[in-house]
Image (cartoon, rainbow, N blue to C red; front, top):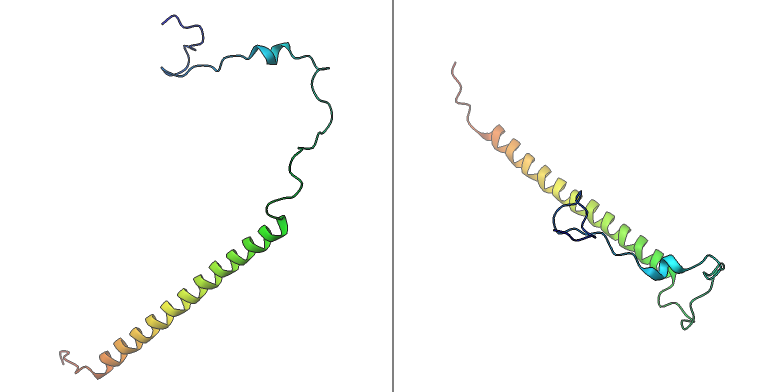
Length: 97
């Protein structure tokens, strides 16, 4: 392979990105040196406040759902444990004397 852009240290098929000649020819004076706002968009589609409220609401709903499901499982486990304890107490003792 005599491809100049092929790096022998890279795996086969991986190539360096070609260098853009415009990037090399741009002088520091020709580049922008101050902030220029994007034109054409006067309003935001979604406000940051709305996204923050939505994120916190989702977090709290998920947390409360997790706590509720854990509480339900704990109640189910407690009732099953009480049933097993009552069955053990009411079972005849068949131990050796």
